[in-house]
Image (cartoon, rainbow, N blue to C red; front, side, top):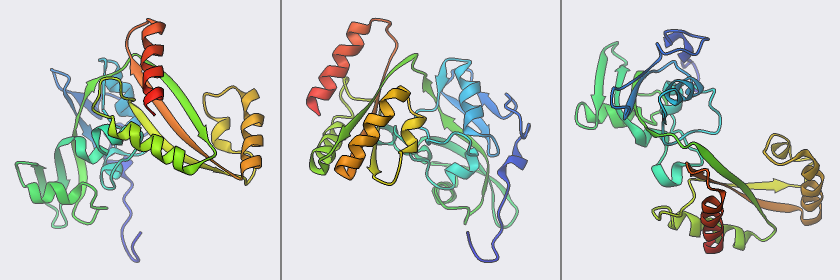
Length: 239
């Protein structure tokens, strides 16, 4: 925030503020992009695009952010190591400049404004519409969280997975986390781990003082569990 600055409620730009709806998210006929209101929430984008079997390729962890607000920052999450942040997956913007002009910009049209606004913290204009790249949405996911007591091993494995991002057997989602001995780690309470595992994790953190974690996900569409597990085992062996 800036002293004497202006904070905008981006939800006021939404065609259906407070309600998820298709008015905020219009998917192209070929389903390769969506025109999205700057006031739409990412959860609305997800809900609308999934109806057509597609979705943006990269997300923030919190989906209850406005599209315009997130793109004015960067939009970083677990898919960033493969596809870049959300601002790297935008084709076109409508921007209201400081002069009150509405400008449509892209990499090929008013490109200076386009790149200034993306990640520009609102200093160069307000995003009122974004054309966001889409891809087929995965049907299934294999989710894992790997725990480490040694930082060198943790960081080496993370770097190996990132370096392997372009390979067919690469993971699709990767985040690194640090757990400190400052009480029960709340992040585990809302994870996919069974509640009965939380005491074991808490005990490990208390014993080691610091525990490192890699959160990993592999997307797949086949219902064949054997294929999924083969990919998982191959990936973890490389790590």
